[in-house]
Image (cartoon, rainbow, N blue to C red):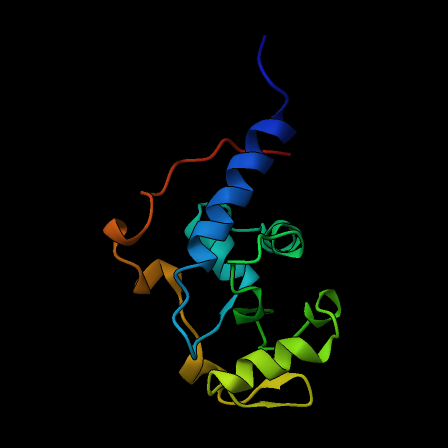
Length: 128
């Protein structure tokens, strides 16, 4: 009996999101959408955000922001200021919940990752 689409995609997708997020270099940030695009799902920024909400402690969730460099996930940190504090500790400048010089610190897994650094990309079934 085949599993439901949700079970097939969520567990594997979330694990893949965590694997990519663990590769974000110190002092760099990426976006939810960039991770989703790398994993082969162009319109999956919200699903990446959902995965990051429940990520394991060894995943640097503070390095994942929205496509404009805003700390939209900060409310999932306790306290919310922790996200900014962690980024600043790594040398990332933040003003008013926004990454300063976002393009300079942006890390794009689609262009910056070698295939041997993580699992090879898998084609994902279309959902939806």
